[in-house]
Amino acid sequence: MTRTVSIHSYRGGTGKSNLVANLATALARAGKHVGVFDTDIQSPGVHVLFGLAPDQVGRTLNDFLWGNCAITDAAYDRTAVIGPCTGSVHLVPSSIKAADIARIIKQGFDVGLLNDGFQQLAAALSLDFLLVDTHPGVNEETLLSIAVSDTVLLIVRPDRQDFQGTAVTIDLARQLDVQDANIILNKVPSGIDKETLAARAEAAFGIPVLAVLPLSEGLMTLGSEGIFGLGAPDDPYAVGVRGVAARLLGQ
Ligand SMILES: Nc1ncnc2c1ncn2[C@@H]1O[C@H](COP(=O)(O)OP(=O)(O)OP(=O)(O)O)[C@@H](O)[C@H]1O
Ligand SMILES: [Mg+2]
Image (cartoon, rainbow, N blue to C red; front, side, top):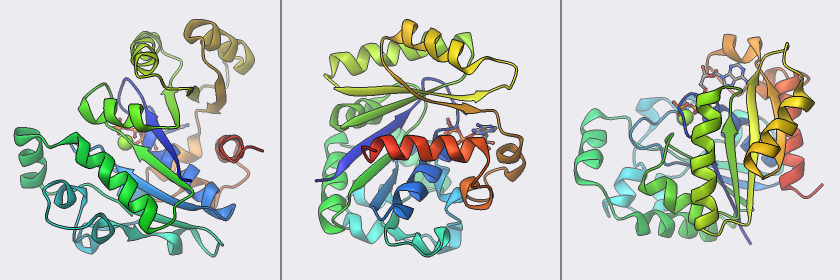
C-alpha cells in the first residue's frame, strides 16, 4: 500500500518544497520507495532541490495531464542525488516553460487525472510513499490532493497571517474527511519557546503538531542549491525532519 502525504500551506514560502525534498530523502534512506509530485503547476520549484536542470527535463506532469504521455515517462529517478541507499526517489516535475504554465492556467485541466497519475505511478513503481508538493492557498489541485491523502502536513510559520489562513485549510480538510492532518511549525526563531508555540498551535487548530522546525541560517544560505539534510545531518532542522519521517514510518 502506498501512503499518500500532501504538504500544504495557506501562504507561500513557508518551506513546503524544502520539507518535501528533505522528507523524501529521509524516507528513501530508511529503505522506502518514494514518489514526489510537484503539483505547484503555477510556480514549480521542487525540481531545483533535486538538482534537475531544465535541459534534463523532457516530459512533465503537464504532458501527462494533457494526455501526451504516461506518468512513468514524466518520472525522473533522483536517487543518485541523495547518495547510496536501499530506497529510491522518483520526481514528477511540473513544466517551467512559460507557455506550458500559461496554458495550464488558462485552460485548466481535469483534476481527476491528477489522481490517476498518483495511482498509476504508485502502482508502476511499487511506491511506499507518495509526497505531494503543492501551490500555496486553496485551489482545485489542493482540494484534490487533500481529499486523496492519507496524511496531510500543514506548514505554518509563527505568524498571525499563517495561523488565520491555516484554520481555513483545516476546515476544508475536515469537510473532506481527512483522518490524519498535522501541523508542522517552520522557521521558528530561536527566541520563541518551542513548547509554548506548539501548545498554542494545538489549541488553535485542534490537530497535532508533528514538529517545530527552527529558522535555519544554514538552510537559508544553501538557498535551494540542494537537499540541506544531506550536507548538514546534525542541524536541528535536519534532525526535526527525520523526526517527521520517523512518525510517518510509525516509529
Ligand atoms: N526552516 C527554515 N529556515 C530558514 N529558511 C527556510 C526554512 N525553510 C525554508 N526556508 C527557505 O524559505 C524559502 C522558501 O522555501 P520553500 O521553497 O521550501 O517554500 P515553499 O513553501 O515551497 O514556497 P512556495 O509557496 O513558493 O512554493 C527558501 O529560500 C528556503 O530556503
Ligand atoms: Mg514550493
